[in-house]
Image 1 (cartoon, one colour):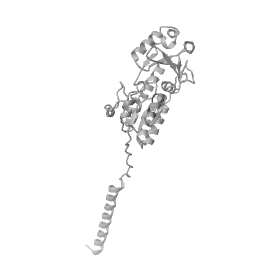
Image 2 (cartoon, helix red, strand yellow; image 1 turned 120 degrees about the vertical axis):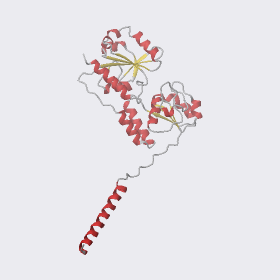
Image 3 (cartoon, helix red, strand yellow; image 1 turned 135 degrees about the vertical axis):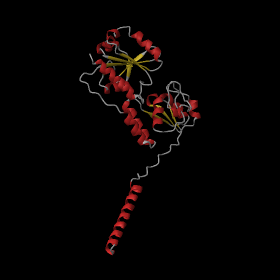
Image 4 (cartoon, helix red, strand yellow; image 1 turned 60 degrees about the vertical axis):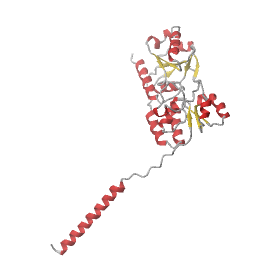
Length: 296
């Protein structure tokens, strides 16, 4: 082999080696993702007082020192946490004993907690679960506060529902029953009312300015609802019995919803007076009921 060819082969070999080194370096370092900032470790002692809050804080991977007393199933990781009562029966002594840095309450129930917690110098924060939009905004705010933006964004994506447009909007009457036999009419600004509106329904026989008002049978008779949704706030068996007794009297037997058997009894956990993580299930159910009302 001539000297010239040996030099050419040496140069080629060096070039190949350099290329292999470059490729190896790219494989080793080029695909490496930039280091992610460490997730903020939350050391605060947090107490929540409703089931939706418990669900959301757990989804955001936030530690809880106390959770509400409830018959509903709580997330597994917090089922054995100390129970602090609920809006009906606040266990203030238990809350104080947990030495919380912050106690979260529903904005609609602040009067039950405010004075008592203030006396104990415990910080209280009200969260809004009035409707679907308020709940998603609350998730975003908590994500920002506790450096859980990624989890909050992911959760809100899972909670997203799509509005339905209908040429003719079914007329929907929303009733909330309470133990003792009384019930109220809910408007479009209530949580369930908001879902009905998003599903293409039209809330009737309610006061547009007040979320809940006493029943006005004249308004209901005039409205002629196509669908009636009856929500039990508590003690569903007793509430349903009260509804059934009331519906034997006029104007209910004459309403299209009753004649066509489009009266639906709902209860927690899927349905409730305030927003919760079962929103997609509830929304899908409402859409199906409204679809059925338009089949004839």
